[in-house]
Image (cartoon, rainbow, N blue to C red; front, top):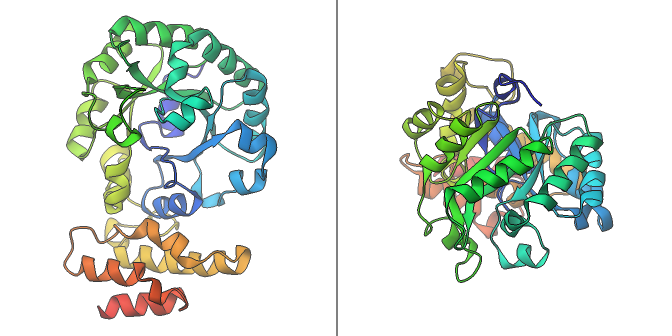
Length: 337
């Protein structure tokens, strides 16, 4: 098992959540311009996609993104072990098993939140991955599913999985309702019960627990860090990415990054410098992979959230009529606006 202080070394103290269709490698490059220390996660990648698809397309990432965790979706231990090996070979810092996604598509694949009904199967998958790799293997899960919302259910799940070699649990503090609610509703309607995660930490003090769900401010982050080892932020961080530029100072007592360069005073990290770095990245990606710049720019549309002129700036970057222009020209137009 990992020592308790590993949370600081690997960045579980503050993390950006895996978000399907959002936290691709372009998004993660952008986020890394804003924070050096926060741990970043990939979108969920299914074992089937890696076993039968284009491995490079799914696992390729920019070196600047590290530390970076690969989230896997699957339930077959041998498949999970094989994909965990691929993740380690490609240079990921951690392998995370998705036991929290409530979507019907994921349920049909027999993984995600429905796996919480089968802790023995999850434990087998964790053991297979732990035996296969030398990097941390973690689990992201809910506090319950459907009517199984009593504390004993999640406590027994954590206990069984920890015995298989998992020492880090990222807990979304809501139950997953597998029938009758969409994934979006599952992020809002089931009530948040943070105390259950605090109780897990009290009952398993030797394990690492990371709080997830409904956290929208630095004050909330600090409150949770008084009770658990880490906090994972999702949509609030994505929609207001400039918040990330405060994290290294607020939660790690370090100055923020300056577009991937060595540490500089906080005043050197500006929205303009980050935007310039993203424009350079768009040009680099176009040359290397023929990536259209709007595929990248969509992730930074919240960069000027709350600032005067933000709406006009966002409109220019998202206007399809500009997609034939090089990104530096689009930036010039946005600056004029």
